[in-house]
Length: 150
Image (tube, rainbow, N blue to C red; front, side, top):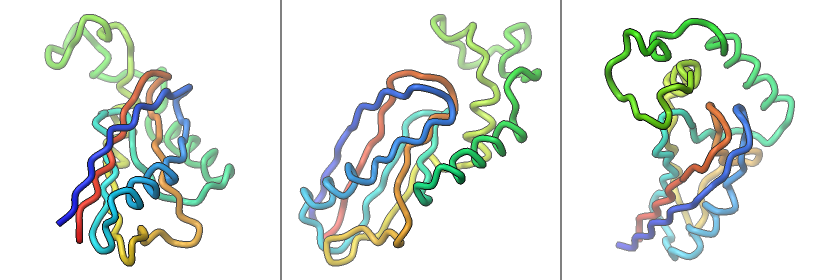
């Protein structure tokens, strides 16, 4: 069995940003020389998502608008209320209210995507691309790509 793991550093620019990482995934699969197996794309962040969809700006705008409606910024979130919150507080981020970002990520429940590899190619549909989606604010991020198979 062959195995490849890659850590890719990203710099996001804004909430709602979609970064197309499809080429990174295709390169990792090619480098791995796996003919039949699986590629897993994973975000180790609680306020990001890995999304597979088509690269169409209308979709991306609609997606962001829907998330704004479901978990708007500026409303009260217990996660942001440091008078009642006692867990998971770090000095450098304690004053940044991002309850909306955590709820958006939880609604999507997509910190990873697993894609079958057949004949050395990820089985993406005709219009499908793999996106890293920032649900919080601009900052340094990571995405892990793991390829396994024969």
